[in-house]
Length: 499
Image (cartoon, rainbow, N blue to C red; front, top):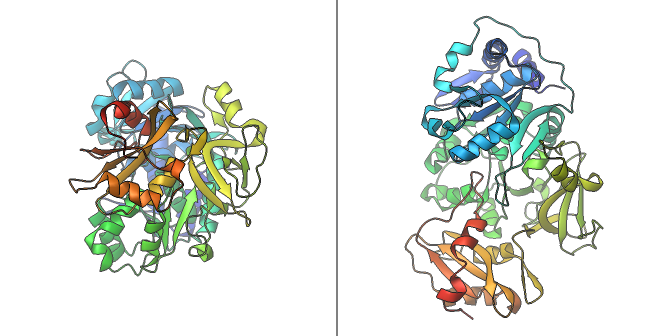
């Protein structure tokens, strides 16, 4: 199995169809195959071969995908690097992965300052010199188990770890998504967020596997998303909830021609029911899914037929996938009880790069331990509750911040909301609500009243803080609660309790 064979297949079967459209330039499947052959030959000339790692510190661009396909053809491994990383963080990933080359954009060159001496840095603006005109390479006969990518986790709970995602794991994930969402060569998928984020990379690969067209964008621009629906006939938008929320909140949402839009899917964070219902009200089934880097961005998805019947559910396992909700001893808990979400299947990573201890812990018993909490209903549908590390214990009772956040989502004036645990003399921890309002007035008593109407008393927030700036997020759009906890550890001493 080699992922490059998929592109080669489409180059023979649908050579003139558009594989990628970026910056107004359309690249056909034939052209992608030819260009990546020439680039693969150039990489070989630079000493890159089977098993060698190449780092990509790049904003979205055609070259990102060309380098990946060219690397697969010679059996090399791509290491995507978070474009928000500082120079020391970039150097850490390059060193940990043992990269032989690092590719970057001119705009990100400063972040490579500590890499020099470790491996050569090549700017994509100079990439043309690597192409060997007219060259053709045979596709390496890699095994399912050989790495295609080493994707480093975002580091929200500690130092980044490199998840080894193989040709087989991404093939299984892509196939399952294509089947679950009924993707075909006629589909056009919008990708407005970074390829370096595993969700973005996976969306690219799902489209690649299906033979569809990837509408690649340099950044999230909500106006541009509407243009892609109206002018390009885009059929799908799969993104983190915050991007979907921006679409729903945009003035064009009520009047735009969205007739081509047939797939809406959100994941990466809990999805507010208000968001799901708002998209569905425009006639588009809004699905929730659950996945993580370590499962090649695949796990569970809600079937189209259940979009309304199971609002709030992340669905059922993908084909060949397993799901279990377990206690601290890895025993399956009864239906309806909250436990850690465990996944299994061919889409699961091979392990963490250079980290056997973490690999054993994450994959013990043949199950991927996600670190996320959830429950299943009597029909086996998954409901994601929260991150295991985000859960707080107040007076001996479990409080899930995501549950409070869902209650407050859509409240007038609140643009962003996060709930964190702060120290409390009596209860050990207490929930604190942090919001960004963009200047709108939101009162603590109104927040508390909304929570009282829907939550048990032990779940009610005790502190309220309005942030003057948007809440910190990582590249995948997740709010960095660890940073908020450090910044707002003083709340019990400096703010009056709201209850």
